[in-house]
Amino acid sequence: MILVFGSINADLVFPVETLPKPGETVLGADYLTVPGGKGANQAVAAGRFGAPTRMAGMVGDDDFGRAAVAELHAAKVDAALVATGGAPTGCAAICVDANGENQIAVAGGANRTVHAGLVPDDALGPDTTVLLQMEVPLEENWRLADRAKAAGARVILNNAPAAHIPDDIWPVLDYVICNELEIAAAAERFGITGRDPEDAADALRAKVPTALVVTLGSDGALALAHEAKWRVGALKIDPVDTTAAGDSFVGAFAAGLDEGQDLPDALHHASVAGALTCLAAGAMPSIADRAAIDARLGELSPPRPQ
Ligand code: RIB
Image 1 (cartoon, rainbow, N blue to C red):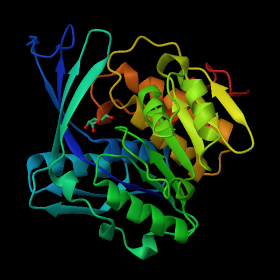
Image 2: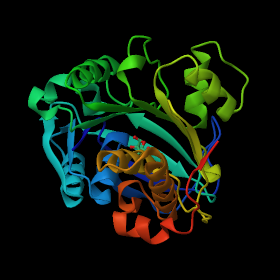
Image 3: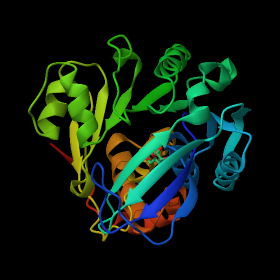
């Protein structure tokens, strides 16, 4: 069982030719309003992968919140631990350029009131994989991570957007998943600077007891576990919108481990899941399901030990 503890947003998506620079206004045509948020996206990714999945989080008493919960239900995610509070549902402004690259600003709203008390003790046990990100109050993440570890759960943190992971939390985390910017930020906290993402991950791995996974965009991903290091490539695609590619990777990776896949197999599926999410606009609507992932898996060589 996957338990995602995290953010739920409405995404306002603005396709533009080029991303605005500071002080610049760029003009586009239409915009989309779709459910998103790193937590909810990862829950949808795990649900569409076929994993039994629960989501814990907060929304406002508004149409954005109701739409997000409906999308969770549509992906067969149990949203009984999503509470409605006084603050409005979180909202993200997302510009997407002609190459599919994005720029995101998030108003946290109800996500800022998420607390570990949303998750009852009986939701945590040795058969649970807890999935955390960094869009809710971090001290609540750490509270839940501690409780989850004590209950024997697997704990996975997606360090996105990058923020400080306290020294005493690293041992509680089984996996930390970062993109290239996030691994650099995590490594810098340990005085590791000026390295490429793989070197930064190697150096960080020597300092923490946690397995690391680094997503590398069109270069695929790396996993540095206790016993081995693995590298997987990426599907060759023409990206439309890279939003939620990381979330899709993380959700599929967690779902793969949860169903008993070994690390290379989970990495393989996750890389395909991330790439497929780049083929359509918006976060949640573009997240691939298991059938789509399995249909393209053979196009990507399995991970190689390094
Ligand atoms: O990772 C993509 C997500 O980041 C978007 O859905 C947006 O809501 C922000 O949380």
